[in-house]
Amino acid sequence: ADIFQQGNRWVNWLEKQPEGSVRPVVIESVTKIMACGTTLMGYTQWCCSSPDCCHTKKVCFRCKSRSCPHCGVKAGAQWIQYLLSLAPDCPWQHIVFTLPCQYWSLIFHNRWLLAEMSRIAANVILEICRQADVEPGIFTVIHTWGRDQQWHPHIHLSITAGGVTSAHTWKNLHFYARKVMRMWRYRITRLLSRKYPELVIPAELAAEGSGRREWNRFLDTHYRRGWNVNVSRVMDNATHVAVYFGSYLKKPPVPMSRLEHYAGQDEIGLRYNSHRTKREEYLVMSGGEFMERFSWHVADKGFRMVRYYGFLSPAKRRLLEEVVYVITETVRKTAMQIRWRGMYQRLLKVDPLKCV
Image 1 (cartoon, helix red, strand yellow):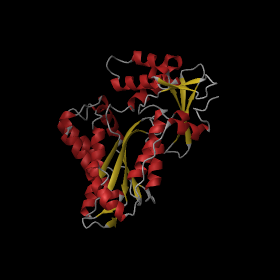
Image 2 (cartoon, rainbow, N blue to C red):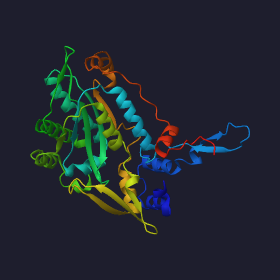
Image 3 (cartoon, rainbow, N blue to C red):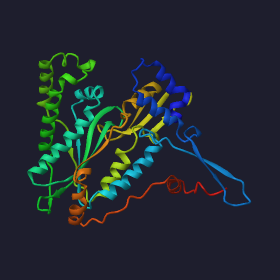
Image 4 (tube, helix red, strand yellow):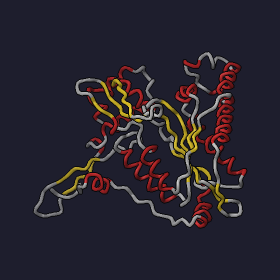
């Protein structure tokens, strides 16, 4: 919260924005983050159980905002436990679906397209699996930021490296990047063409979006190019997938551990590992630029960043429980509940409820 309050940074930035330009969910999220862990959120008061001690301690409630750098750590840890309790014990594969950079601003001004991207990515893989008579388990994570916190919408998809057939046997599958890319590219292009009347065309695409003919010509230009779809190596089990997703993808967009403040200056430094140079790089932003980037990545209220398909979807959990777990010899685990006291003890080696 300090990074928002220091030098009245958040309020100063907000006052400079045109009226109505900042989404209400952004204002609500930052307000919660600044109040997180303070008495403004409410608190529980603990009293020492010893009759000779009058010591008390207030434990303030957290905001539970998805964008909060503190609450996000717990949310990620809890989600890891949930995924480990759900995922069958089998090999998994990770696929990343990206878009041409010329489309990024279009997604920014039409955030509903993020859900369509997730749906299309899953449907591409499900179609490949249907051709092989296989029902896989899939979940996607919608990501809007790159390592430098720029706007970079893309989809992370994890899938069981195989699935259950109509005969209730297990069949292994391998996915080829070129085939996946072609199907992804075609379906995204078709979507953007079909939805043209509903799209908010950003200023930088005004010429390309001036009419349907110009729009389709723009889409066709990028359809002829190769898109980046990365199919990773197969992971041995769900544990690797859960830890990766929980520690990286489920984190809030702003990694406070990689931010540095400059005393007396309205500047913020960000350390990040560059995909381009393969080295750690350093980005210096003004306070206003930091606030701007943060606001981009706050999800709309009620928007699901993680989605489940195949036998992981709620509609097919019976298939998962009665067939998949049996075939893969998976012993269903109970998701461990992550409590604040346990996290405190594990991270700081101190019991917060032990009387001083």
